[in-house]
Length: 243
Length: 243
Image (cartoon, rainbow over all chains, first blue to last red; front, side, top):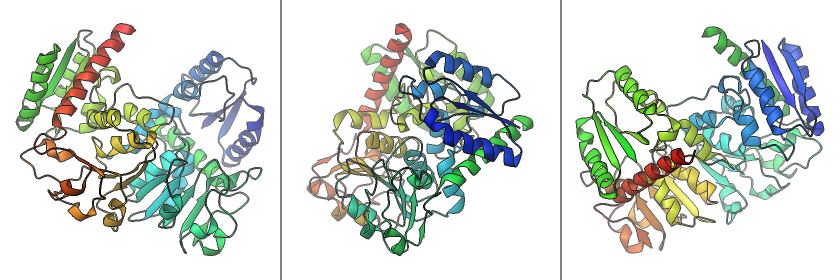
């Protein structure tokens, strides 16, 4: 079973290394394609096409963020849907959104939460709506019968909405956008940013006193994202073998 | 400019006729493919593939609902994305959901509302989450910076949520699930079911006394769905010509 990680930006090397190490631990052969930061978009896409057509490659991951001169849509859209272990292909997101459809791969950050929690009848608030976390997690929770509100920078009175939530997914760009006294006692609080020790967390420390469940700082959701990525790679390889 | 409407169920003939008549009025050539109700799924899909590869066909619409023995996902998924004027292809829905992506076609029911309303900062509640209305309209409103909550049959205390809404989109299967005194004075109320005179409306009559805007009964959203379908057909033809 073979996975390929395509890295472009130097500052994403920490994540690439983390994923490479995890692959080695579980016996997935990982190959890195390190491209220079000024690689033309067309060259990156040609590389992705080569990996798509290589039958020995079961998963392709283009490490985000990409340098500004590369269009993310073009780069991610080039990945063959059956090797898209990050689950960011619009066809995967569409199937994730739609009732009665199942995506080939679930995006890794929401995937773990989905497996852990029976979200049925929960009143859930996801903060922000990025394609990587906020959007797929809200679609997934909705499919699991939660009542989901996506709170973002244009939301009037976010406090009133968040105070009602049984599950809070903090994935906003701003640190501490959510105040500690907005957390309902016993609520589950997941701070997506807590995986990145160099960045400020989004939930203030006092939240841990009232929350029923809260992601640990540091580490947070990081290790489980990597675990879900390995799982997607395994699923993708099984899918190819089963065909 | 040519569109094809594929009809299978006899009871969907009213909608097929409405669409055919509208096409004729604006100069779109429409061809009906009437298949018997017991048509095998494989035959329907073969027909769709033929239409996909016909350069004289600019739009394909498979009239829903389909007979129970036909898998809706297989039938709709067979339509080439550049002729999918209903906008139900998962790739279209995925692009609709994702920030920074644009679908080729917007599903017709939400399309009109999207064009009419500046949803920015609105607190919007869509009731239900069907692939045809509830889901795409919620994705579209979210993209337009509204704060969207999708209320459904598993939602605890829907009254509290709906009472806060500036825009209410009623697309639930049940009639009058929303009570008249839940409507905030001045709110915009859109009842998707009001297009079908044979079915009970979802919003009670007394709602019209408090709502700032409400869809008319009968007719409701029906004529604009057809208009948006014609618009999508025009856009599809322009897109082919522009290539």
